[in-house]
Structures are given as structure tokens and as C-alpha cells.
Length: 153
Image (cartoon, rainbow, N blue to C red; front, side, top):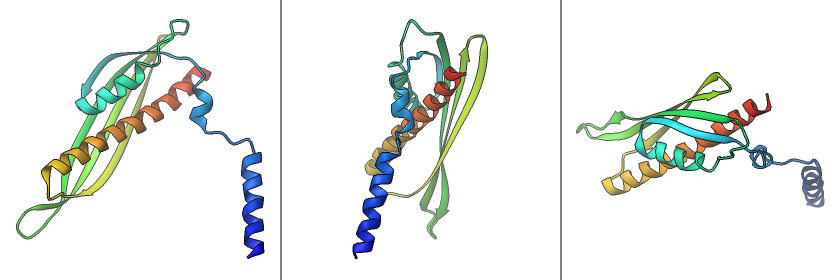
């Protein structure tokens, strides 16, 4: 018992003393100048991405132009004997085309989820709406990591 507590305390000291900090928190102080020039595809995903990218306006930095194309697909995975769908597979693909300093870069982020069919259609639509927002947030974070890497080059 004492040995376990001692190990936990030692681990706590090691983790707090190692200088660990999340990657995005250290990058928040870096400035980017981002402009979304076009967007196509899923409206919900694009709205979240555009609203998050609008925050990054800094006239002192070089302009980064972004085109967004998002795809949201919902496929039936399994059906019961009556033909009613029991499980769905949701696939989202978000394609970002980045233009900066006369260079272009393309990033494609894919997410895949398996969900059960809801008995209530209203609950299912709300769940899918939350899922779209979460996918947009994940893709935003992935994109920002890539943009900060490009900015460091």
C-alpha cells in the first residue's frame, strides 16, 4: 500500500517537473493571418470551421488563403430481418487547400464513426449535428497544427 502511494507521488513529481505543455497552448501566442476564400460541401461543418478561422486575423503577418471542401456521408452498415437499418457508418472528409507565399499545400482529414440507429429521429439528428461540430473542431485543431508547422518553416 505504501509502495503504491510512493510510486504515485514519484510519478506526479516527474510529470509536473518535466516541463510538459500541450502543443496547441504554446502555439496560441503565434499570430497568423487567415482568410477563407471558398467553401463547399457540408454546411454545418463549414460554418464551424469558418467561425473558428475568422479569429485568426493579423494584418502584420503574411496572408494565408484557405479553401474548404467537406463531405459528410452516412451509410447503412447492417439491417435487421425487416430491412430496418440498425447500424450506420458515418464518414467525413475535409479537404483544405492552403495558399501562402505563392505556394500551395493540400491537407485531407478523414474521420470515421459507427453509430447505432436511434428510435427517435429527433435525437438522431441532434446527435449527428453534435458529431458534425466535433468533427469540425477536430479538423480545425489538425489544420492549425499544420499551419503552425508551415509558419515555422
